[in-house]
Amino acid sequence: NIEAMGEDAAMALQDEGEGKGRKRPPPRVRIDKSSQPDYVNLRMEGIAVTFKNQDVLTDATWGVQTGDRVGLVGANGGGKTTQLRILYGELEPDSGDIIKSAEDLKIAFLRQEFVDELVPSRTLKEEMLSVFEEEAEILRELDGMDEV
Image (cartoon, rainbow, N blue to C red; front, side, top):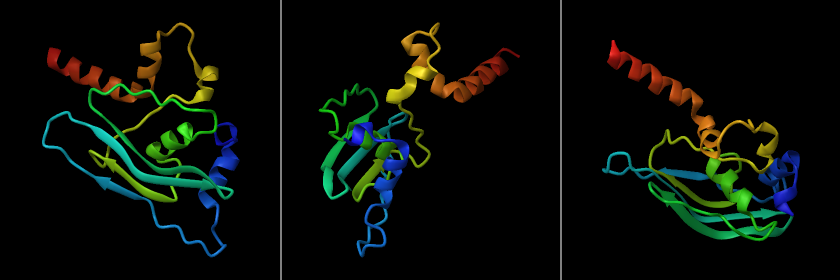
């Protein structure tokens, strides 16, 4: 069950097959810039991951763009977290491409284990926005400059 495996086992997923004659191609991250201002997209194409000779993902292809609301739903062990970790850059796929709208695209996701880090007084929106505290501070500083 890849969804429930620990961090060490997940990292072993990256190393699976090394030293056994199986040479994995380097992951490809392509940049697909848009001429539309404020347009962002992130896609995975043909992603495959194998763990202990069991295919976890085979030819996974999907994406998200500005304005989309996406739910990643599937059975336990179906590779949902694995896909998010690949998009986040925390896990390398065996094959396939990640396509981003900008090289400096910042990606964040709320981990399943987040419950220990929750601030109970925050709303859901405040909790989700908390991953962008540094950016929010910069925006506040810039807004303050307008008033001077």
